Image (tube, rainbow over all chains, first blue to last red; front, top):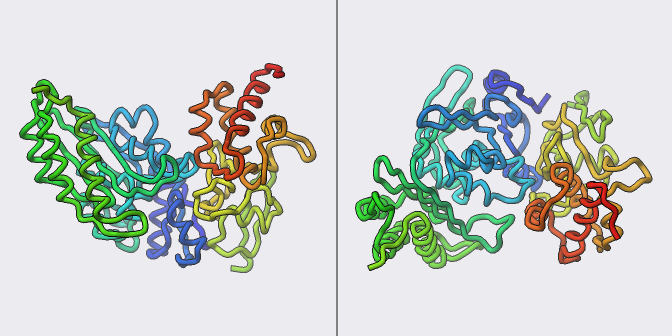
Length: 283
Length: 162
């Protein structure tokens, strides 16, 4: 049969060994759009959405292990949203309930779109992917996995098994801009995480470059300016942080928005996210 | 592949899908091969929700489901909400509230709302709006749809309404 519905990780890997270039189908919410349009050839398909090992997640110490077939709906659930709030907020902005029921975190990674909603949170978290084939297994940092617009370092015969992210102590925010609330592809997005143990702010810009962008200069700057005891910053720090984030963006003009608009949006979103996470000191 | 077939369980009954092309969506197979034209094809990219069906316990866009991957699952379409020739409570409520205009979004909304009321028989306005946020209606402005949900919810709670 041209369609293998894998029921175990081993099933999926065996099928993939036999058909290394098969289309790996998780939720289908990106792939099927292309199939329906006739722009994606379909010969062999390996469906991994119902592989129990991939649908599972596990919280172990300071780490969260997310199976590649964990859906956006599951990410939004109570347990995961308390462990990785920014990722849950990002999942919450994907499509509609129908899309979030089907779409998966592994699918978002596999598509590697610059507008992938969970990608900035995963970049800010320095997520580590477990990439597996029938005979090999390796861990790949997310910034080495995603290599460009809709391209990644997955080889034939390999699939994303799971994603490992740290469970951080401190508030997190995700903000996204689009024309309306539901069913929106990101025009610009911003993720901000705080790590109160390391006294660090981690952030990432989405949809304003070929891949998500860590504004490292802005992160270093604000991390040094936060009063970590009080969880406060001076208002001018927020302004400078926003300016540094905006200047880190590398947006393009396209049908969803202009580069100038996106750069401005990042300035607004980054200040907004930071002001939600930190109280402003009153001078 | 001409001898290949797969079986889909739709509204409680098994149906063989013969001589299918691998890339066919569940929506297409339901409508064109299996005679379930209730789910509607509007956008074919998951934007509109007109093709919403239930697979096991979840509502999905059938246009984004590869049909051959939906084997061994319970697929419920609008045709499965009530016995042939009868109306389900949500359908009845839509009629009472006047929530149908052109009707194209209606099957998807009915499947979605039926599922919502199974989980929550007393949904507040925000919960309803959230539940149907993936079902676009360009006629009604949603007012009467929201009203119909409350009528159906009341009937599911066993309350009579005016």
